[in-house]
Image 1 (cartoon, protein in one colour):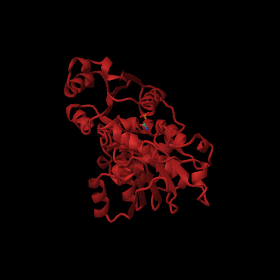
Image 2 (cartoon, rainbow, N blue to C red; image 1 turned 30 degrees about the horizontal axis):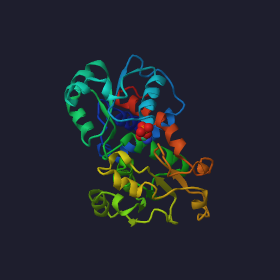
Image 3 (spheres, protein in one colour; image 1 turned 90 degrees about the vertical axis):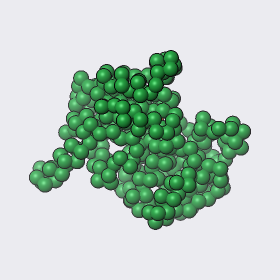
Length: 318
Ligand code: CP
């Protein structure tokens, strides 16, 4: 049986989420992040109808497979249901309706809103207009907090911890929102970073400045064809074609690197290879059965973490 003090603290933490928005990882304290990861361990095999009768609105203004479908599946597994759209061209946005008006209307039809949008700040705006909790499923190049939580959950399952790890971020660090929210969070846990990208896709200077201010150990490398040796995790990202203002710039970097068995032969241990997916050509399929390949595990863990988030935000966590 759980000691009374611990039970009170768990109850207090669970209550701290009720009705909240999660737009950025900065919305969560370190204690809350760890609470979500702990609860997610319990929720992995749990499919009780905690959310029976509750409705999730999935508003996807940008394409998605994993995030949208795993939120939908998470809601279904917990007995709730989903409304929404996967393509805003089929919504009244195509007639000129504003995001603010869309949110004001949709909040009447649901208990919680998940939104993905191409503009940074769109999820925050949605949260400002909604009386229902809003979860950011990716806003432009800014943040993707639920991806970060499932990435952390995956890292902890593999390494037994999320602190004091050496992590290389590889690929499009400029436009990759999954990198932006994950690196800021791992920085709280005394991890060290190697940032490997073509110079034009380096991590935005605001994030570099934040890491420097925190005293985080971080070095940049600008030849992504050379992997850093001193790492536990390679977090790889797709070059985000859709974010480039000029397609010629994309053509210059689109094949900047490729991870395959041969590239990983420099390591005398198994390194964890992560990727939020979808991949294009940056990870060879010959790595799919590599012991350290974690990208499909990440996608699978998405449903566990999203079941947890929906339950705590809707005050149904047990
Ligand atoms: N990782 C991720 O966000 O995937 P989707 O774009 O398919 O949702």
